Amino acid sequence: MISTVSQFYLLIILSFTSLLFTVSAQEKTARIAIVIDDIGYRYSDKNVLTLPGSITYSVLPHTPYGKMLATKANANQKEVLLHIPMEAENGKKLGPGALTSSMNKVEIHASLSQSLAEVPFAIGINNHMGSHLTQLAEPMYWTMGFLKQHGLLFLDSKTSPYSKASIIAQKLGVPVQGRHVFLDNQLTDNYINQQFQLLIKQAQNHHFAIAIAHPHPETIKALIRLIPTLAQNNIELVSLSALYSVEDDYQAQIASSE
Image 1 (tube, rainbow, N blue to C red):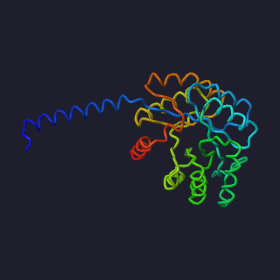
Image 2: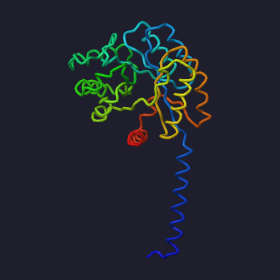
Image 3: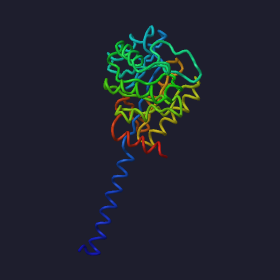
Image 4: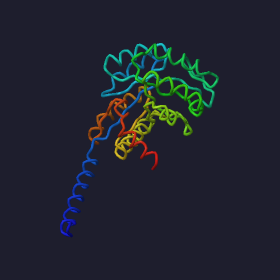
């Protein structure tokens, strides 16, 4: 039997160990991934390649400059996604490589195959628009099935709060995360600064965060200024796939339950 004195010292040791663990967790560097999507229609989109650090680039399939810019990003050892157009609730024109609710499984897989053939080094996809299609179970099962077959990941752009994409990806064993912050829905310094601070707060509170931005001149200028401030906040800019770990999935579950 452990004596009362021994129990007391054991309690002290356990409390001290717990304190050290808590301090260590608090001091752990948070991580952020920034995905620039909507790349491919404008020659000026090349300017996003000047952004510092481990930016992830997502290119629209079958666009005038998408393949060229994806190839340059890959040559610079940056991760590349396919930014797959998906049907929106507002019926907006989607462009080439789009997935719609009128397509069957064969058609969805064929379209995704053609897009992947153009950028074979893509590590996964995220949805361009998709507020309607991501709510539909069957097309999402077909889409995630394709990703599973090809060892690709999925980033849910979360264009709908009712998206079923992440849940279905998890069911099929497809690596998945969701966007936390859109950085540039408004192209003003004040707005982008505000969203960037929101991104930092998300990372500090939950150890990681994912932002999506676009190849606007205003965004590029702001990010060149803001990205170096991450280190001052003990935050590391990482490629998107670095956040697809068991630990981060656990943190994401905690964040979503709060």
